[in-house]
Structures are given as C-alpha cells and as structure tokens.
Length: 127
Image (cartoon, rainbow, N blue to C red; front, side):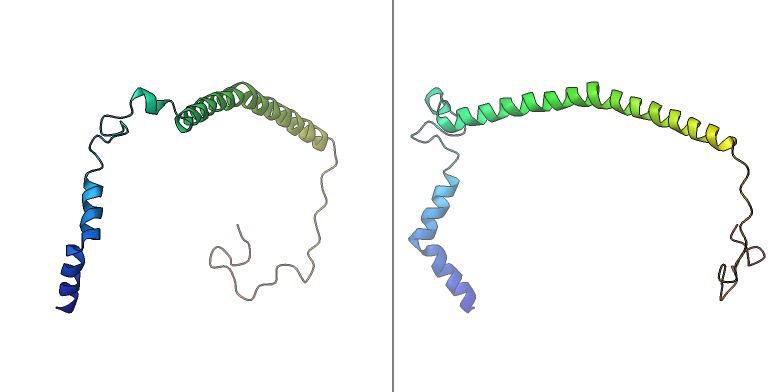
C-alpha cells in the first residue's frame, strides 16, 4: 500500500509528467526541421552528416579493395602454395622409396606397460 501511494505521488509530480510529454512528442515536427519526415536541406549539410558520409564512402572503398585482394591475390597464392606442397610431397616419397626398409624396433620392458587390458580384441594391441 505504501509503495502504491509513493508511486502515485511520483507520477503526479510535474517533472515526471514533463518527461513523459517530451518523450511522446519527439516524433512530431520540431522547430529545427528534424522530425518524422527526416532532415531538410539545411540540416543535412552540417559537419556531422558530411563526416558520416565520408566514413561510409571510405568503408565502401576499403571493403571493395579487400574483396579484390581476396579474389585476385589470396586464391592464386593458395593454389600456388598447394601445388608447391604437392610437389614437395611427391619428391619426399620419391626419396624415401630409395632408402632401405626400416629395421624392426626392439621392444623394451618399459614400453606398453598396462595395468588393465584393452576391452577389445585380445586386450593387448590397440588396433
């Protein structure tokens, strides 16, 4: 009850009513020419709006530059790098084919220590 009475007193205060009236009246045409219809010619040519337009033009030019770089530089660079990697891969395996086969590695007692067998197969091998 006390909270409701406090709220009612606050809404009757002139400052509160003035704020609400100002807020709801913001969509109407004001004295500066700014309103629901937009900006008129004089208000459109201020420093803020011209700077915003310059930023927008710069952003369009920069995004166009990066799009062109992505298409005409990055894609061919990836293709060239892929071809080089493939050439090196083939060259590596060509070299490996001429080497003698690797010896079997000895199994030392500290390798393959398990406290519990695997639950598949024979319990010893992983594959």
